Image (cartoon, rainbow, N blue to C red; front, side):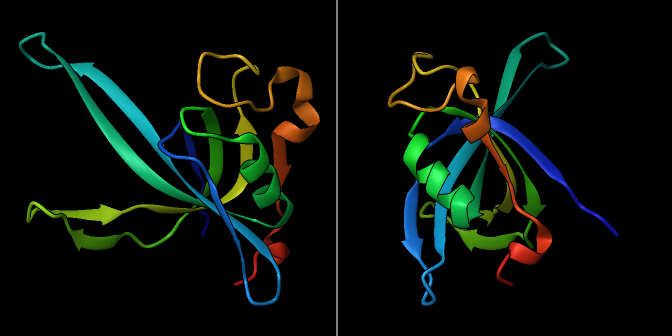
Length: 137
């Protein structure tokens, strides 16, 4: 069996990097994806879905260094089991967590979003691929 998820969206907040007990860097950030369509009455509709992304090792360091809130990013990875939770308003939702295997920084250095980043001219830093044996679980 095989699973691969591809997301294209914008960061909802700046990445947060931390280290495991053995010193392995791990970076987490949220990505918002938007789906737009017209309903049966012709009204424009939109649904935003949020994903929590985790990157490891060198990829974690690069994501922490170059990504910032509002930046466009493509993430390839594996979806973890959704975790249900209750929101403050009493409604239920699920946390969608993705373990990143590839991160591509989209847009140029000055793409109208906050912060700097890696653009098309920096393609060597724009994507880091992890092999399965590098993931620490």
